[in-house]
Image (cartoon, rainbow, N blue to C red):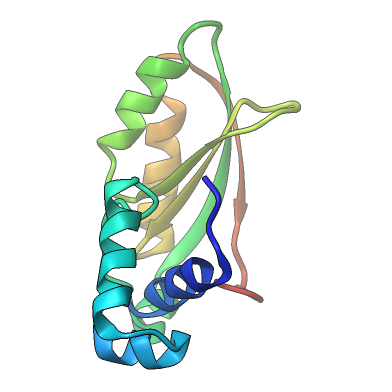
Length: 143
């Protein structure tokens, strides 16, 4: 899908603040409120925007321990592993990758102890052959 500069700006603004009033978005892109609402409706209809969510604050994020858990998965078992990982609320994102590992699960826990138990649980899932974990020390850029 081709998005013009105004659509890209609207997406960037909504990523920053999904609750931004349409009137303010209209002023930022130089269109009428009605035109901006029509564009947002089109972006939703075309599945460019598929939902809106809550962003957590800096204090909360700093209280969490994040890690990237790289997974090697048995042949033809990525589907069941993905299904199992979807059920774990601490799994924030799951990526398929190329290279020595098959997937990266980005996880977040409230403590080192919970992170340790979470990683152990992921390693015990049927189909997971091996894991390698890197704990995130700091976030340098977040968009």
